[in-house]
Each structure stands twice: as C-alpha cells, then as structure tokens.
Image (cartoon, rainbow, N blue to C red):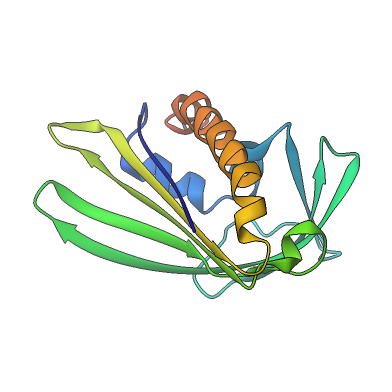
Length: 167
C-alpha cells in the first residue's frame, strides 16, 4: 500500500536537502502530533548520512508511547531536464508498537527544483507499507502524512535561512 505527497515548498532544493539530513528538522515534520526521541544515549546525530542506522522511540504528543523504529538512510540522485532529483530513503522498519506488525516500510523523500523556479522545491514523499495490518494502518498513516505535508510546507521557509556566523 502506498501513501503519496507532492507539494511545492518555499525554499530552495539545497535547503530542503539539508533539512532531510537533519534529525531535528525531520522530527519537527511530525510535531507536535508525534515525537521522535533517540534511543542512543549520545542523542541524535547532527546529520543523517547515507548508511546511518538510527533507532528512535515514538510517542504521540510526547506522552503516549507508540513504539520504536529503526531509521536506515540511503541516498540516490537522478538527473532530469529541470535539475537533479535528490532522494533520501528510509528503509528501516518499525521494531515495537502498533507499526511493528508491518513487514514493509519504504519511505522515500525526493527534492528537486520547481521548473522555472530554482528558489522553490518540488517535494515528493512516498511511503510503501506492507504486512498483515497494512490495510488497517493505512488510514491512520495517511492522516499522519497529510499532517506531515502541512508541517513541511509551514517549516520550509525557515530552512532557507542559515543563521549569521558569530562575530
């Protein structure tokens, strides 16, 4: 089963790509509905690079435990006529909680320039799930993904502005 998002966001593709690699920015995409907390005692890494395996605990509104998830990051790049498409893939898997009944979790997020608007980003998001409870979980995940899309659109302008260097 698939859940798809396609939106145009108000930041350049470089800023969107940096946000996809930031564990804090990714966590903000789910907030405040869902919180992601690192299981590693050293906390979140500063960047999610290809090859990263990052276990996280999920909770609804930071209160109701929703289980643990392994995030496994890979990347690929595709050249298209309007610019490069950069794809970050999380092929990890839910470990515990309601989502652990899924045996397929393939989440790909692609960013590319909007044709004719290099200052804006085309964001494509695809989640593929499978397993004995996929049909029952699909409506819940679809709702979360709609929330995520709204959060991405709201947060994107802040990604475009790097802080001024300290004097």
